[in-house]
Amino acid sequence: MFDPTPPSRDPAAPATEAPPTVRPTGAFVLAHPAHFIALGAGSGLSRFAPGTAGTLWAWAAFVLLQPFLSDLGWATLIGLGTLVGWWACTVTAQHMRVADSGHIVWDEVVAFWLVLWLVTPASFWGQLVAFALFRFFDAVKFGPMAWADQTFKGFGPRGGFGILLDDFAAAGCTLLVIALWRY
Image 1 (tube, helix red, strand yellow):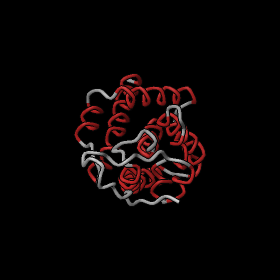
Image 2 (spheres, rainbow, N blue to C red):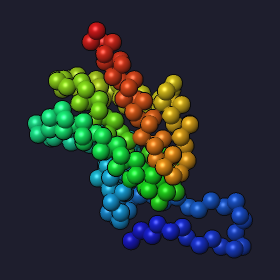
Image 3 (spheres, rainbow, N blue to C red):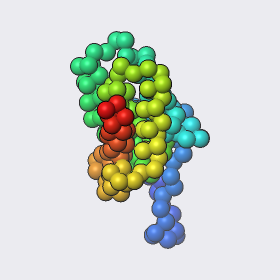
């Protein structure tokens, strides 16, 4: 079972020694509701490109939920998902002892839901373009993504907000490119 309290420090160890980071496992995902949410129901456990895995999970969830949710339903889900995600990302980052672990993918999930909701109706190919653009902007982190990523680094609510903000900036850039393309 995961113990969120930091291990006691060896008194003989130098004071500058940082506590070890936590590598998430299936047990870690299930140890706390915040972990389950922040790690995208386990999609963030991917050893290769967890952000991409989380975005693919978001896409699949969108396709499954789309027939059942109205615009108001999507707005509510994304709004509540952002607030709950802020809490979940904050708690999980603290428990992992990493300010913005790549394994925390709820930021990709909720930001990509926003993209897909706003480009709907879109064909599979349109959604694929949205996916590729979103992943590009999320990965390169220039301009507004870099600002958000650097300005809100850290632990606590500010850090949890920063985890989400750079992905919302990537979503905004994605939507801007799609709007210009459609125009």
